[in-house]
Length: 240
Image (cartoon, rainbow, N blue to C red; front, side, top):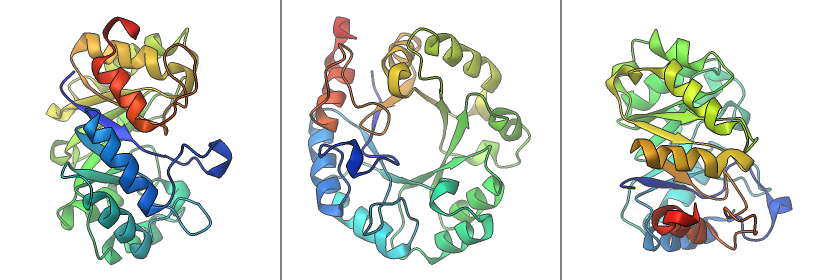
């Protein structure tokens, strides 16, 4: 598998366990270990002092600086609507960033996705187009004038059932089709994370893994770190 992105924390918080990195320092350490285990890219959710996802320039800068002090691979952040619900406020946050990520994910089913993506592109930030299963994101993206300008498409399988996630992934890929000619990264979440990762491996697609997507290993044991998840994804072979 040539490209494995590590998703360090997601919207998870302290209630998900001490292994989930939240502070800039913890995220820097987790990123370094994950890259050493084989990750080629980093996706992170900067946190407020109270542990909530935020797009504030101070938090974004602190998080990016901490991670970049430990790794040299590209680092991206979320722009999920839950971090800043109003589209205009989300765009204003992006325009106020003092330190820029290499890329940022934009969920195409969310209101304001086009404006958020345009603001990122205007600042020279790569856009990962998040196309979630069970939403109209794929249809919106297919009609978007920005489709050909994104860095990659994130095919996000939201089906957490290990018995059906693979079929849901195949259906999503069929919806996405040619993906505007952009590379596709396929990944799942929770119980569907490993079945979807296996499918990505079979199809030769980029994928991702980390504590954002799953807290457990393929055998059901609790993962002790992002690095452990990445090591299994990169070198697991038959263990998957």
